[in-house]
Image (tube, rainbow, N blue to C red; front, side):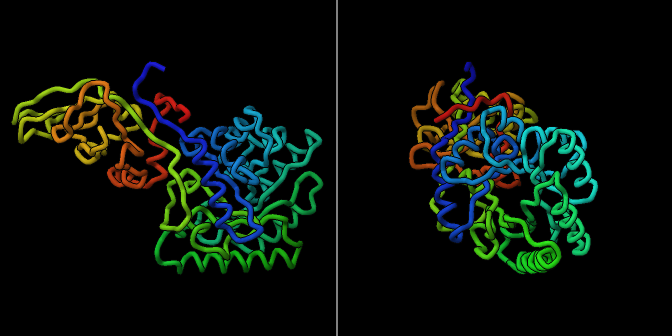
Length: 368
């Protein structure tokens, strides 16, 4: 590794978080570790193995390609593709032994065809739309029809039924409770017609931490698994990611000097400027210009001027002794200070999920 711009991943933190979250669930509920989007930027196989060590009973991914990456890494745990069944991926789902989300008759038909061609059975989870208006079937009669078609097919395993909450992280729980009631109503109709599958699941990270009645047999936990919970809670979670670089240069500027493109920052005093080899090509967003802070020698220093493609600058005038080569933390802890995913996201006018996914492909991941 040549670059002094990298992300440290603490596998033990993911394992610890899986254990802590599992203990926080209602007795008997299992943990589905959501490792989509390359494990929320932490590495899909790495996050999967760490979560399984912590007691996760299954894994969630967004696409068949992500499931295939886990299989190629030697992971044989149950993997649910949370995205819709698609014609190009049906054969891969059947061949790789993945479980697949189904929302309509077309999905049932294509999975049956793929399973029949390979002489195998595909595990299916029926998704119900209770108010997210994304994937899922929202009509109860249609949901019952789909459940019957899955349960009666010799090529499909009738293994799960689930929904997704839209507002579980919001203080007002009215909408979430409405979704819970709608889910319960649809489940009752399905149970009366064809019976329920072995697994019901509804809780995302926020609901897992706030609504015990939504835990059912499995809770789907994503962002909290990586130590960035979307709601306040009493579970002792540890951040698993630390984004680090090292100073390329430290220079002295006089009062009145402008910094970076557009001259958006002008020094108001003699200033020590630190140049960092990280920019928006690495995922350190341009929106962080003149807003973000970094940690140097255990102290905070502001980013000044516009973030460039490959570099940005920090004002280290108030951090004594800074030199080229100093470790600089963009996300995570240094000494007694910490920049959380929530704080970094706030400077980007975004959410912690996007902050964790910010470091791009050219930023190496290393185990801590």
